[in-house]
Length: 399
Image (tube, rainbow, N blue to C red; front, top):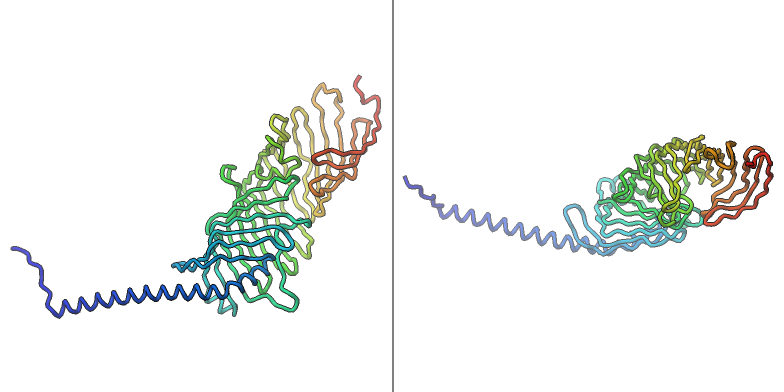
């Protein structure tokens, strides 16, 4: 039997037509509504933009330049390239290629202020240490004025790039990638953060996890640093002469350090273990190696118990203590290789000094080989400048 399509009656066709017309009108209305709503949001942003720049910039201690409005999307509205300029207390800067903003309505009602969820795309930071060793100095509200009731939840939509200048003994920067979140409660002057720092691609993986927070007006901070197979190579500039061509640093760090700061006084606990350390000043030079260096932190000091090391045929043990005020105390025992002119007596050294401006300033260095002694003072950096007094025992001189 041949199939024939059903013929709709005239009333049915009219009802279908009216339905399609209604759907079309609703769709057009929604499109016009979204267009006008986008215009309204853009207008509101344009009016509050200077206020946001001033309030956020004041809290973070530097001018903020927010980008232009870029439009509305399903996950919030977007603005263009934005940046933090250098502050009055430090020269650090930061920029992003785009910012996504969302308003947390329930959070804003609970705060009786404004809670913004801020997504950062293409973030880059250039951190430069000031004369007091600070990289990013947060701001303070002008006298007699309270900070706004504004909460910011900052999250990186993709890993960002961080370049750290002046962290070590050389001018060479440290390059890292950054991911995670930061929460700022401006009216309480509080910050919470959960960040993951990683070496650049091709450096062997590993990570540094930073968790903590604090209140910047009272200078109260509590945090934890966790190292998971973090390679030491990117930290080469922390070592003296770390910018020499052809030099190298290898090894990895594991462990956890806790840090507590009250009124600028820092205290710590926990420890880090460095494994497979290999430090070479320049290409072709003999590397200094150590299989294991167990660092522990107690109150205001970083401590290394007596640990073996090797420098070519030379072997020895190193004990160290570094204080928070940059004082350094080292004890070194060196065993000459067999049939060396110095003989079989170990060389012992006791150093007391301080790290300052990329230099090791030696207040006192006492060395002993058998009955012979030396006492010296001066500085060690790109150049060596020492004043020394010797007392040589003829019995310690090889025949």
